[in-house]
Structure formats: structure tokens, C-alpha cells
View (cartoon, rainbow, N blue to C red):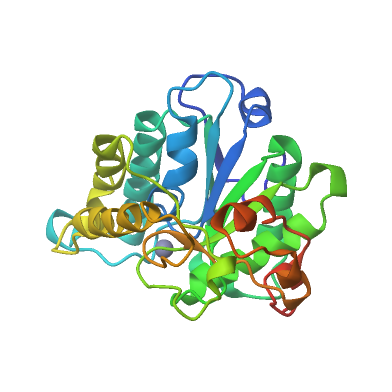
Length: 279
Ligand SMILES: [Zn+2]
């Protein structure tokens, strides 16, 4: 596969060839930064972990060069940080038994540049090769502009796919904040209570993100517990934890208002799915 950046990598923990590894993908997480997928796509990681026919592929857009750094990393150069972040993403892929981890290695500024077509093109090629049934990415109202930029590229890439290979479900995930502004029928709360040890480990390997006091590992565990409590409710009134914003006024009438209905109907059909304009 030809990816835009010559420094991009497709890392396959079990040594399977890259094409074959991607082709077995069932679930895919596409995030801006090297710990995003472990934070927002735990549902997919857990669904594939230890399974013979389900495989998770992570895609990381940015190169990690501009990351904040502290503690033992305080004196690291941008180039050093890039290596650290890549290594951490690979460690997560090993721990989580991912089918593949794709490291696209874009500077953050390029991800946000609407005139740069590379990222959307790469995501489209990866999705053509992997044909994931389920895709997790950032949500359109995410606080972080690089997250939103990645989400837009994902939507553009999926829109370009032939209808028969589009994912069955695309989730725009919110972790840190609530989606209390969304109609309940448009939300899905994931139950990510299984293998809590694994989810904790997957976030903890991103030591450079945590070092210096930003305890994403503890914070994410707390948010997961919030979500788990919500999942215990019998209806879709809950709105904590990992949830999905499935927007698009044209589709709302499809919803019966129940959580299972929202899950079943969460099919992507391009940017209008998110209610986001082209940029
Ligand atoms: Zn991020």
C-alpha cells in the first residue's frame, strides 16, 4: 500500500504481512494522537481481543513531534518524542493483540490543513484494504481541533468508498465530556467493563502522555466506570462514558428511541451523517 508519508508504518504485532493483516480487520479506530484510540475505541479493542475472527486495527494520524513533554522526557527533542510516541503505540498494539497499527506520521498542522489531501487519501486506502465493519473516530463536537480535523478526513474518506465496502457502523466517540446536548435516541453507550486490567494497561503504556502528572490512565478508568454504570440502565436515558453522536436530521425518524435501535441504525453515509459541512 502506498501511504503519503515515506515514514508512515504499518506495524503488525504477530508478524503477518501488512496486506493480509489489514484485510482481516473487522474493527478500526482512527485517532489523531497516539493514545486516542486506546481511550476512545476500547469497545472495538475489547470486542476483538482474544477472538479468532475479529481483528482490531488502530490508525494514528499525527507524528507526536509537537507533544508536550515532562519528567524524563522534558529534555527530549521533537524527533525523540516522535520515536517515543511511535514506540508506545506499538506497545499498545502488542498488548491489545491488534491486527495492525498504522502510524501515518503527519505533523499536526498538516492534519488541520484543509488543502492537504494526504490524510483523507491514506485513510481511504487503508479502509479499502481493511474494509472494517465498525469504525471509531472522534466526534464532531470534540474540544480538540486536531481531533475534529481527523474526524472530517475520516468522513471524506468513507464517503469516497463504494457503497458495498462502507462500514456498517461509524461511531464518533466522546470520552471526557458528556453528550447531554444530544437526543438520547442518537446516543450509544458502550459497555467497556470487561478486561479492565487490559484497558488500564493499554492507556498506561503511553507513559510520555502521563509523565508529569496528567493521569489519563486514572481519568479514563473513571470515565469508563461512569459509562459502565450507565450501561446498566434499561433504556437510553444515560449519557455518560463513551457514547456516540449520530447526528443528521434526515435520519432521526429512523429511530425508535431505544439504544439497540440507535446501534442498529448507526450507518454512515458520508458527511451529512455528521451534519458537518465539507471543508
Ligand atoms: Zn488526542
